[in-house]
Length: 484
Ligand code: ADP
Image 1 (tube, rainbow, N blue to C red):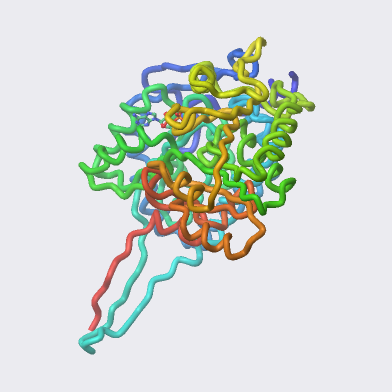
Image 2 (cartoon, rainbow, N blue to C red; image 1 turned 30 degrees about the horizontal axis):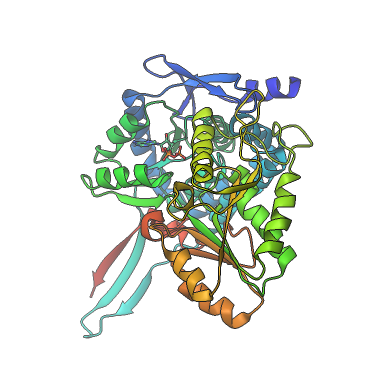
C-alpha cells in the first residue's frame, strides 16, 4: 500500500479555490471510501453555500481575462494539461480505481479517453468561427461572432470520475469560460488532482474551481440562482436533471444535460455471433455496467438466441471478481451499498416474477460492495429491470421475431441515449440506424464513445452534446452584428 499512501498524499483534499487548496468555510470534511473494502481513503473538505459563492466570485473575477486570453494560449494550457495527465496516467488510474472501484485496465482506458478531451479541445480553441454574409436585401452586412457564455457550473457523476469532468472543462476553457466543478461525493479525488495539474501547467487562479460537497442540492441551487452564473452542464440521473432544468428557468441559464439511458443492444439472426458476444461484454460489463450507455436490454432474434445466450453466459460466468487494483480482476465492486441494494432489488423482483438466472444473481459475501456478474432471461415485460437503468453487472436477454418488433421494442422507452445492434446486412444497418430514436447508434460495435464525436441523448436522455466539433458550441453564445 506504499504506492497508495504516496498517491493519496499527493492529492489535494481541500476545496480547490483561487488556484490552491482551501478548507471549507464551515471547516467540515467528509470521507471518501474505497468501495472494494468499505474503508475510508481520506477526508476531503465539504463545501457549503459560502464556499460556492466564493468560487463564483473568483470565476467572475478571473473570467474576463480568461475570455480575453488568446485562443492559442488557452489551447496551449489545455494541451499542457493533456500532457501532464498523460504523464501521470498511472496515478490517475489508480486513484480512480481506489475511489470508484473499476478495474485498473478500465481506469487506464478512462485516462486515455478523459485526457483526450483536453487535447481535442486544445485543438478546437483556435477553430471557433463565425460567418459573414451580405443581407439579401442588399442593405448591409450580417456578421456573426461567437463569444464565451461566461461562468459555468459542471455537476458530474461518479462513474467516470475523470472523463465526465474533462469533457466539460475542455470545451469551457477552450471557449473562454471559467468553470466550477462539483464532482460526485463518492469520487471527488480525481477532479481535485486534475485541478492541481491545471494549476501546475499555468491555468490562472479562479478559472477552474472544484467544490466537493455533501450538500449538492443547496450548493447548486445557490449558484444557479446567482445571475452571474450563465451555464450549467450536468451529467447524472434524469430525475436530478429535470430538477436542474426547472431551476435553470429562473436565470434562463444555458443548459447541457447528459441524463439516464436504457440502451437496447439488438442482435439479429444474421449477426456475426462471436463479434456480437464480444460487443455485448463491452456494452454490458465495461465499467461494471455502471454507465448510462450500458446495454440495459439485450434483444436477440430467436434464431440466434439460444447460441448467443449460451455463449454470453459462459463469458459472464468466467469473470473473476475482486478489487479493481488486483491484477486478476475482470470486475470490481459497485460504487456503494445503496447501489448494490438497487441492483439486487431489480434482480430479485424479476426472479420473483418468473425470470431465470443463468449465472450470478446474488451479492458476494466479502468486504466492500460486490455483486456477482449476472445473466437473466425471461424477465416479465412489465418488471422494473426491463425499464429502469440497471447500473450494475447484470445482463438481461429477451427474444424477438421480426426487425419491426425489435425496433418498436427498442424505441418503447422515454430514454434515447445510446443504442447498439449487430447485423451483416448493409440495408438493414441503414434502415435500423435511421429508425432507432436515439442520439447515438453503434453498428457492430459495443463501445461508441469518442472525444471526436458528439455524445448526447434525445427524449428524456438529455439536451445538447459533448465532444466533437459540436461540443464547444455548448459554451458559446452567437452574436449578430449588423454592419452597413
Ligand atoms: P447517480 O444516481 O448516478 O448518483 P445523480 O444524478 O444522483 O446520479 O448524481 C449525479 C451528480 O448530481 C452528483 O454530482 C450528485 O452530487 C449531483 N446531485 C444529486 N442531486 C442533486 C441536486 N438535487 N442538485 C444538484 N446536484 C445534485
